[in-house]
Length: 277
Image (cartoon, rainbow, N blue to C red; front, side):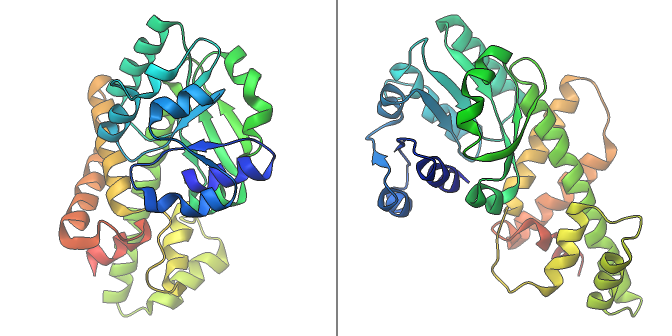
């Protein structure tokens, strides 16, 4: 996701400075014209807009905190953004840290998959001060086709966790339905094509992806099962925070965890259907 975003910023004339824990992943971005930094702190010091995009809370903490972290290289004139899918506990803590320092901070998780990042058509799910968002809206147009503002900092992450809960539930349900259809003697491709062609009630963008994947080549990964399972765990923690029972979410997270534990973690989320074969 971050690689596609960086390349689109470059394509729109921005100067981009990057850092990544795995240096070998930077080569294509550097060839596209990006500058390399030695630490998150250096990226922050050299940039007007700082965007962090990593896998989970632990990785995010390591990037923001410490002597080489983003916060150490920041000042009040920069806009700091997290675009990872994170827990509310960590996002709210990071919000508090930035507020105490007087830093401008937005939470801005993404939706649109790897293809959206590469094509500059992401949808940005933003929480934070309106003035801060408006000050960089034009810049964010380099990577997105639409920006949604949900309210105070942390609102974007709350929406993202609910969104990914629904995506997981839809994919889990259609995966089980496909397995039932196969056991009932219906050809999986015929089942998928009929639902897609007929635009029937259960069809949604998420279920359509699972159905379409019947015709994909093996190895295609837009969003890994292990990453969605992590998001579902964070979403369950969110339900606990608000004393809300979301039974479909809990069942879905359990199924994705089984899939991950059974060796499907690196596979695309559409492979959840394999869990029920």
